[in-house]
Image (cartoon, rainbow, N blue to C red; front, top):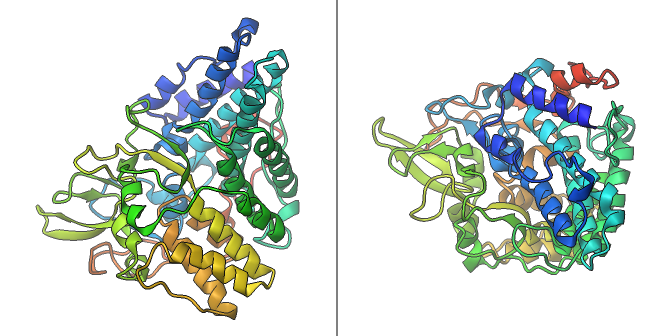
Length: 478
């Protein structure tokens, strides 16, 4: 595996997609896991698993980056945002679905995910030497992190099982469970990868601590991810069962604004604190730079989405804000998620990854798909009663399905899910022709529609990865 890691290091230098934050990440202890005596004491294993977590904070993964990572790409690819003409033009190729293999969209995530997987696999391969009382917990964390990295990759680079009838037999990714020195793995099928995700997450959920404190996974966080995996697989009852094991309470309406301003952690099952800042991350500049009166947005809330938030929906205040660029006399519906803390520097906010509200919405969708409309509506209302002063309810049939999908869009706007939801539902991306200014005027995004059948729903495997591993097969259409 040393050979592969060396190749990956060269790749990072060649493509130059990583910032100085990633350079600091490479200095984390256990980066290369080069010596046998690195894994002796319980503290060694604790330090090692923290090194695995640290990879999540790299800019191209969950740390925020102009190259596109988990914090922005699922919305940039979808219908939730409109390209802002006053920004720097970041991720425009991604937004316009004009990428090819040589453009390497999400290439940074691809590399960092496999780096995390390698670190986790080395820890797991050494765990037989670990006799500490926290062994089961650390092993569970490593398996869950390995699963999360594989899951984030396959949602971009492979089909989702419910997307189409041929999805499970189509090209997935290489699912790595050993730190093999000279491995040049082939891509497994989508079905195989999802089965492996379930194996890792089920084992991790059974053995992890109920809580490991801020910045580390817990039993609830893993069950939320497991419920999502089952939902993507179309295994509705399994998704419900995993969601039912989540005990974290959904954030009440009074706490929702404060969650995104880092004034409370209500409803959070897994988040990464950035106070003090983690490796200099400034995640909020993903969407905008500047202040309320001199905003330079990269992307703004699509006018269609902005108007879908009811006036009594607290998420409109929590997720969006009105901002101007007084120099140009322009007003924007700006994205507040990840923007900043009150009075703080732009971009300095905690990274939120799993929230209790997802368990309820996963459960609602799965129940509806099983024909259990009453329980589905109850699960949906568990979220709606904590978001509206006068929550809607009472839908049946197709209207209930649409209500579940709408609440999912509103709840997770600018939060790493929209593109994947459209993809797994087999729906196109249809952007309205509104512009980038607050009243819907201005200039719309260049491209407005991506058919559900488009190969662009599966991003290309980075060309540099193809060059390094002759056993990889490129996605169709690239």
